[in-house]
Image 1: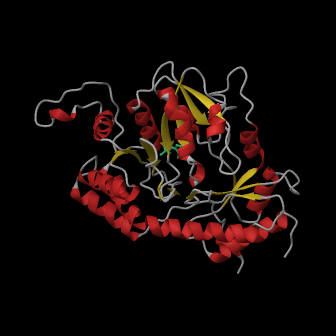
Image 2: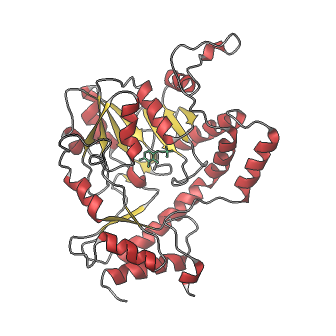
Image 3: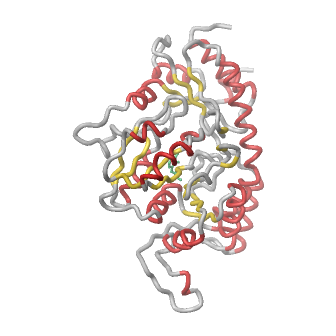
Length: 377
Ligand SMILES: *Cc1c(COP(=O)(O)O)cnc(C)c1O
């Protein structure tokens, strides 16, 4: 069969079915569109799934990160260590509270911060670290907390990519005091846009609920409204939560399928010398939210030539996550030297991986990769 006639194999595609459409339609008919009973149900189901004490839904993962920093009382004059290799939001969030993002390099095996890369970025003003589980690969939380917590540095998890990943046998997002998730269509499950903050104590959950709703005081439910502090409209809608409830039921199937596809890629492409392929770290499992490969220096074609050649052959691939310490929004007079981040910037690619990817689609991607690598089968 000629795959070219079926259009381009996409890099990612959310799995949405008639169940989501029905749930959305029922919500429309109910007339309850903004934050209501379905958001509460989605929060309860999500906290059970992740094993968090409380989950508070937000309008996006970025909003979740912003509120997580506020609850940790990070603000003006504070330095926050962030991974250079991450979505721009990880670095933007400290700016929202007037704090200063300080970029750290990442570990080449996981694309994540490690205790040693964090240590190199600490300053006298470091008050927090945002640890991203990049593209689903869990970061080594225990060694990071062992470095930071004795120094009074708060550890926050950017778990926006990592729903369904595990660390030391339990779900990612519960190995720190606060974690942010995202339901953007690029993530494991989607609500269109949406986010969640998971916390392990009730007072923080209560403050998060207030902050996402203009700072409305919770005690005032039966009385007049009062506002003790300035908050935001970061609410999720019931329409989004209706989708989220259906998607959450698909989560284990989605993760199983993603892991199966990732193992197949590892098996089929792992024979190319010098190529580094994303894999589970010893201490956890990835949901393989994106499947990345680091090309060797002597790969026959450059990364960008590879991407355009794949596209000409009907396969969408991408550069992996870019380092942010050189972005105009953040670059100072001298950006730090972060060699691993720069290496990912030059030589990392992401291959297509989505739950409904077929075997023939995956074989096609592998054949093309092997041809580009100079291995004909
Ligand atoms: C997607 C993502 C975010 C932001 O989530 P949104 O829901 O899109 O706002 C933050 N950090 C990382 C690492 C992400 O991948």
